[in-house]
Every structure is written in structure tokens, then in C-alpha cells.
Image (tube, rainbow, N blue to C red; front, side, top):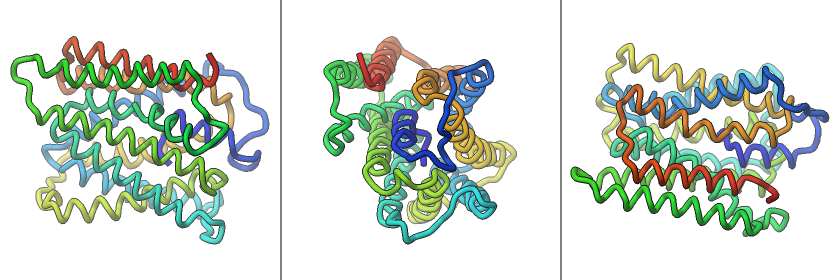
Length: 319
């Protein structure tokens, strides 16, 4: 599954102790802190890597191909004995659903990056915990939102509105940017919906590798079809930058970093890991400004701070 800091943590809490979940988890130490900083930096580079290679290979093609690469690697991991892939455990239907949602999420990311900056996408994508909390509030009685979490949701959506409407006051504003930002929010909603489905179905008891394989296989197939039908598969120039971005995404982001995350969840307290997750959009904005020279106006900066503040409040289980 996707690295949902809020959603993955919740899923791992619900799983019974077993091969994928250690009985005893420790407080954060220097190694754990260092690994989380490294992971957040890698995740922050995600949208930047896609954007850098976009002139050579369309974002939708990048995501389709890297999903295929990662799917093969995850299948190999399962074949080596880490997890299993039986279709008789009631996960096929929800697996197909989360696969479609996962593909839809990345479709929004890929299309959104054609119109908006990587910095904007990094912030709006990480609204996912807000949508997760809203979905779980209605579908799981144990996940009812508390008053402080409703406040966090209001702050986060206020930040989105600030970033959206404030930018229109600047000269040179383009509705294309607003459309790209909106797709970023839709991607966050898709990520949140994916987490809700995982939490509310048999996938909550499935090995992480199996859920991840459902999502990667669906993304490869559906996004490749979309790329061909939309004509975005026609112009592919496999330059050094394109290969580097593709391998970075396929090997490092959607394979190695995801499995490392699950290993950390077995080793450390999930609530402690969650604290560091909010560095990902900060890294995303920073890398976007440094590597892509993204501009960050005052309204977006204020809106981003409000969004991240709201997410941090929503993700706290208690006041």
C-alpha cells in the first residue's frame, strides 16, 4: 500500500501480532530518527523526480512504468517467503478496489504535475490524513473524530482555501495552476479513501506486501492504458535523466522505502514514527524550490502552514 503515515499506522495497530508485526516495539533511538529523516527526504523528492523527467517522459508514463518495476520486485519478495498471495482470504474484491483508487490517485498526481509545481503537489497530496480521518469517522465507530480533530480539519481546509484563492490575486495567475492544485487535493482524497478501504476490509489483516502488490499491479495496468489512449505514451525519450528518475522511483521510492517503512513499524512505536512524517511535504517544498526553482508566494506559504498544522492536529489521537 501507499505510505500513509496516518493510515498505515492505523492498519498496523489493527493487525494481530505475527510475522509482519512485532509484539514489542521500542522508543525512537538515533538510528530510528536517522532512518525516518532519510525516508521523509526520499518521499519529499518524489514529485520533484517526476517533474524533472517530465520533458522526456510524461508523468503518467513514469508512474505506470515505475509501478511495473516495483510490482515485479514485490512479487519476488513474496516469492522468497516474505508474505503470501492467496486469493481465498477475502481480499480480492477490496484489493481490486484499492488498486483502482491507487491508480486514480496517481492519475491525479501525474496530470496535476502538468499544470502546477512539485511544491504545491507535495503539500496538497499530504492532505490525505484529513480525508482518512473523515472517512473513518463515518465507517468505523472506534474512529469517531474528537473536537480537536474537527478543529484540525477546519484549519487544514482553511489552508487549502487560502492557498487556492490567495494565489489568484497575483499577476500572471493561471487557471491551469489552480486546476493542478485541485488535482493534488483529489489525489490526497484518493489516498485517504484507499486507507479507509484497507482499514475496513480483510486487507487490514493481509501482509503489507500483498496489499502493495494489488496497488502496484493495478497502477501499472490502468495507467499504462490511460497513457496509450491519451497519446502520452507516444513521445518517450529515455534519456539519462528519464532512466535515473524511473529507477529512483521504482527501486527506491515504491519498493525499498515502503519496505523500510514497514520494517520500522515492526521495530518502533508507530506514534513516535508519525511525528516525523510531517517532514515529507516540507522536504518536498524545499527540494522543489532548490532543484526546480519553484516560487512560493505568501498566500501559498500561509496556506501550507495551515494545512500542515491541521494535519498534525487531526493525526493526534488525543488532545
